[in-house]
Image 1 (spheres, rainbow, N blue to C red):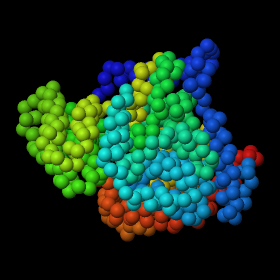
Image 2 (cartoon, one colour):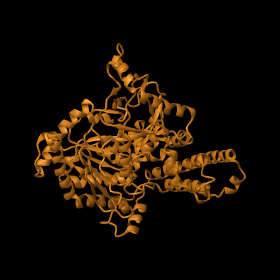
Image 3 (cartoon, one colour):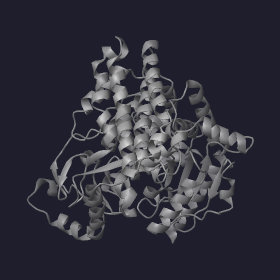
Image 4 (cartoon, rainbow, N blue to C red):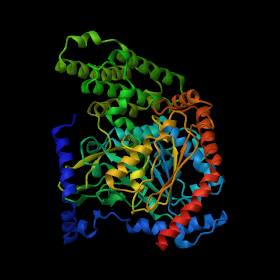
Length: 572
């Protein structure tokens, strides 16, 4: 349930939507102020100058690539092609690397103008763009997945430093643990650095959503995008420089410029599906899985448990010493026993307020168990790294408060902060940033790595497009009947301003013999699990490579059609 302040935040965002035009005029008229003179807030639904310049340069790379493939194209007819990778935790992160690897081998990677990511796919994007020439050397990106893991000491040193900042949150903890345990690196560069690079790589767009507006606000205020040049709400048309994201604003003016998020922090914001309370519904012990008990108080208790277990899992992947692994196993067993202990009899005699009090106490008991465990550790990996106890003393209160993705807000007459979280909770593919006239996309290549119902990302995007009056290709409802055993490729042909979408499920009829095997593969490589073994990483990589290679001819055909559509737009 939202607090009074959070309801006020949502209301004021709605107020902002209504009066955005009048604010734009006031921003234009600001004088005698350094922040205003720099136009720190840009209001527009068009591309910023920096992205326009990058795209012009990138189109020359795309044109050269098309010519090398023997595809006839002129400079003014270069198609706008975006690869939009879905979320899906480590499955999505690894599969995207495999798909792009095969695109490079087939000579298709440089046909991409844009690369858009959500949730788990942003993890691998962050890793990719740490190499300024990644799109010409995907072997290096693949080798990083099997390289040495980052040590616990390095991860804790980063966390210790970030804990000193004003808006330290669980997103920072999640970011460093996924960066080190899954992508095996700590990337301290800033996303805005990409704006100063050449156009060797596709232009990257990351997506998030505003947490409270997602739950209670207007659709226009939900989707948030981050590019190398600017960050903001595309449907409202309000942006700040990416280097200013996290700085302090007041009444639409830059009050205090703060250091830009590094890529570890940004990864934590973009890929934190646990930040939304609904995610805990997948992890409910049997004794509590009854309608009369699973209220908001129970959900708060379960989210504390699931956050603790996930942190234990990710930390385990950073250590090798048997004693330390055993210590973590003991902690996980303590937490599991506490949650699985049937306490239904205690709840039966309580009214809602009484049950709420019990759940709050049980949450505190979980955190107390972690503190007790930490105090009884013998000399070893954890006790020799004093910073480890930061996880106990500094992070546990964040779990109780469920503080994720906190950043300073730049909107006029709006509370001083908002909360950015995983966009996959809303739509697990970054369609909202690529529909309509702004980026004028001709062809979307959409490798699908989501969990849950197949085709859901498409139907959610279709509904979003309808609500925002954006063009979107028709989806035959008969195709949705294939969700339990999909084909390896679907083409949804766009008409007029609609983009064509090539939709490519990772697991499909070509690599799963029937519905049962498809279901088993989806479960084996589920989103919420411990970091993959090397065997699992290799399997997902090879599956994604094969999926791209098997559909190479389809992609070539649709690229040719995209060129013709671009030519028709010029003539029409």
